[in-house]
Image 1 (cartoon, rainbow, N blue to C red):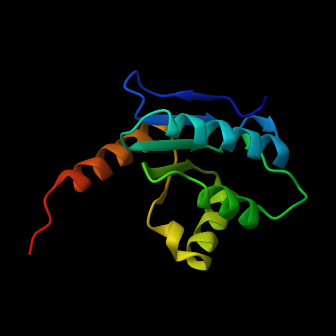
Image 2: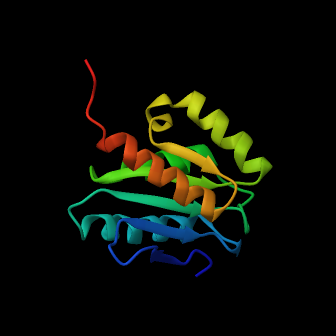
Length: 133
């Protein structure tokens, strides 16, 4: 499977999936089903790192429609999803966040896995701070 999925940490708080080489929409949806199960296997917040940089998107099909369909099924314990991007994915993500602002609240982008981890850490710190009146 060109979209390997694993827990990024032993506490099972970050799911990481790496798009490798050519992948298909069927493989994408199969991977998302596995991710839903992983999120559902724990009760705490789970963030995700989607490393799309090394992968090659399928030519056919609508990326925005596929992403929207998959993101709508994420369980309530999902935190942020950080997408590691190349310039093409960056343009698509920007357009997607404008097109569907609901997902803009939890989608982030990074240039590397290290940057993604830092973004998640910062988001968790923000979430842990009490709201000020």
